[in-house]
Structures are given as structure tokens and as C-alpha cells.
Length: 89
Image 1 (tube, one colour):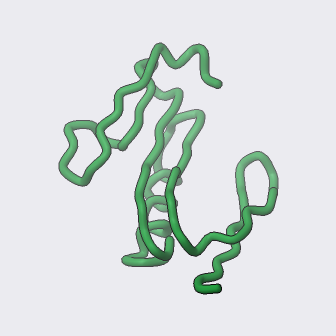
Image 2 (cartoon, helix red, strand yellow; image 1 turned 90 degrees about the horizontal axis):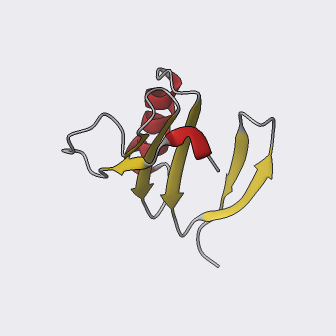
């Protein structure tokens, strides 16, 4: 997906030695945050990561997360996506 990245450095966790959970070896190309939560809004994690990445200068910025409460991802522009949350059955 990013052949110019030169590989990636992975360091998920709040106390990792790099600025983001995933960073390309090529500086300024790819940066990403990752997390798992029952609801993405828990502890404002999604909001916090969105704000963090909005302030970054990487050309490609991503948030990867797993949650039991995401039922749909609808397309927006190539720079945005809308998430619909529904928990339970």
C-alpha cells in the first residue's frame, strides 16, 4: 500500500519509544495510532487520537481500532470516514 515507506516501526502502547504506534521508516510518510475498546468513545480515545493525528505532518495518517460497537463505516472523501456506533443486539 505504501511501497515508498521503507518498512514500518511498530510500537503500540502509551510508553513506547516512538511518537506514534506505527511509523514509516521514511520520515513524514505514514503515521498511525491503534487501540481496542468496547466503544470507540470510551475514555475519548478516538477523539484524542484524531486530534493527535490532525496535528501531525505525515502525508498518510491512520487510526486502526477494534470495537464491538461499530456497525457501519460509510465513505466520505478520501480524507474522512463516518462511523456509526451501535452496541448490543
